[in-house]
Length: 190
Image (cartoon, rainbow, N blue to C red; front, side):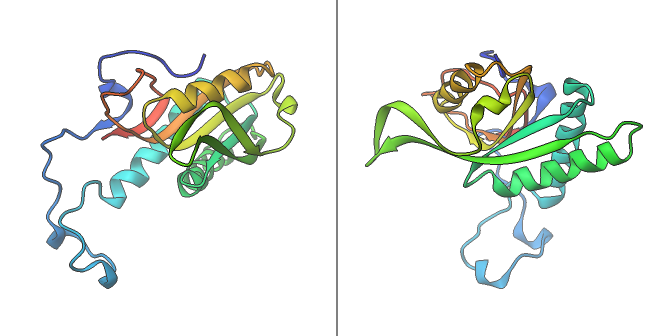
């Protein structure tokens, strides 16, 4: 199964933001005027995000072995991260000796109804998931919280017998309710 259930922080595969991190002073950055008065500090500068996404793309290409990739973007939050990650993957492919085919599809996950957790998660959208059989699948999610929804998604996708499943996440939330799930690649723990 993609991801892992390690309890120890994975410092080698992501940036860790400690609970007592005060952030960067706003005077170090430019930011839109409509945010003036609303922000107290910058937690993660844009340049670090861009560099980390590029590194994630390199790690993914190394893990998948320069093979064709089916990207499943989990909407809505994952869209921008997914677009940036796919662009970096394409750049790596363009600059390699092998062109990699990449198809992107979008899904939404519904595991709550009226703020109550549902028994089963619904996958909304996406092409016929049976087309994932034998493919290298990269799931792109913005934030992994408790891990339960991602585990349910992985379980659903594994039924279609893809060749490989990898999970990339922008953020992994530290929460006492976590089931220990860790994506294969992530930008930072918060």
